[in-house]
Image 1 (spheres, rainbow, N blue to C red):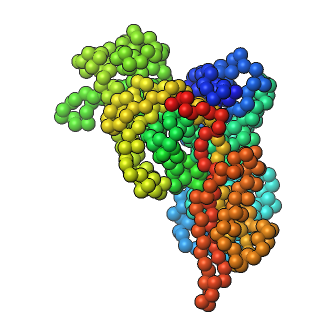
Image 2 (image 1 turned 180 degrees about the vertical axis):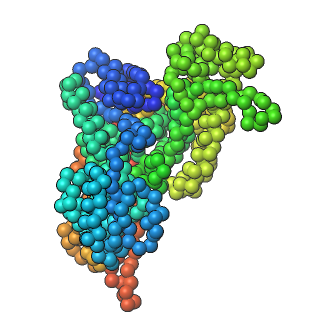
Image 3 (image 1 turned 120 degrees about the vertical axis):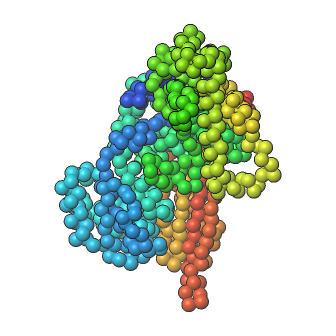
Length: 573
């Protein structure tokens, strides 16, 4: 048996899957101040009557990291940056930054010595200001981490007990500002996330659940619970990832669809192209910072079934026309469910589209607005639904402009002979059955509401398989290689390659495959290593004096997002 649990802004959904089919579902209110309680309540509800020994896999999709960042509850981090030449440090705009002298070039060769006196003075200042955490990031530090390691050593001497993260260990891909942002955020949330992991493990132990436990990541893959603590920021945006994988699981293999996940608080948008979720080429954006975190190309808009409905006066003061406004705030559940304000859910209940909540309460909620506008309850309900669905449809159209700029989308478009495949709009979430048909109508598309759409996110969490990426850089002249995700620089002679000077692309790809296999083994997902695929393989000859003196290889491999084999998708479509 498999369990998937997704924490949403309004409810926490859970699903129990047995023999590839949904056996039971559960929904409990989300407690924003106590996500653990919501997770465990949903777990208890969906597993009632099930022996712990029957459980084979438990997957959580959690907003704990997203909430910490959004609510400003992360720990302050002192950033020690070694940017080298080429950029104005003042333009980085990172908080609590200390700029240090020193530089290495793109191949990892030191071109400016670290100023150790300056480092010691900065360390003393950090101690004086009371920082308990620091992150050290040098430009091209992933090609030569010597400066980062030396700065760490001085910090440890000067500020005992300071918790330190290094950029080359956290985010080793090129693009210095994104590496800074990723390392900063990883450092800021790591301790709190580890506490969260410990609390989950304790709660599962009390319930005698010994099944493997996983956390869903932003790229739609899973990681074992304990291993996720090594890369906590990768668990951001797991909600939109869960809805995307849920739509993938609940629709036919190879289809292309716009995914519209309508919850109580927000609506999440994503895109599936020929059975492959579209990735954000620039990485996830957190707060105002772009990062190196792999994530689906998604957007969240503040419109949902519980969005507050109010009457506003048109911006044109001369007309004085009154209009319906939906969102962006949510004051609680729908009025028909005991909430304080009218919502789209109430309008759907009045129109008979939904059976959720008390009809009399829904009419009461809408009656006040109808009186103010001089319209009937039915007319007002239709206006509310039209407004909400128009906002969602407009966001989809706007999102398409961004999606079409993604390299993967452009490649897909070239390979497609037709565009009709994108006419499916798949509805996921509690508000899907009431609103998705009208959203699809405004997009001139076909609405698809699969079985169990209300808990599609939880299904996505339950059946998502692990993902893993590896980016390898090889420099044959320097006879060394580095893996962006690990940050270590290793000599090539340790790989067993016999003639380094004659290394070919096939050799680099074989090395990448072996390193990814070892990395998958470290994360406890080695059974999926055989499904890894090469997504990029480039070679550059280095010429000096009219002769080739070496080669640079860059290879990217991944275990892509997908579904575990236990899920019987054909029977769910």
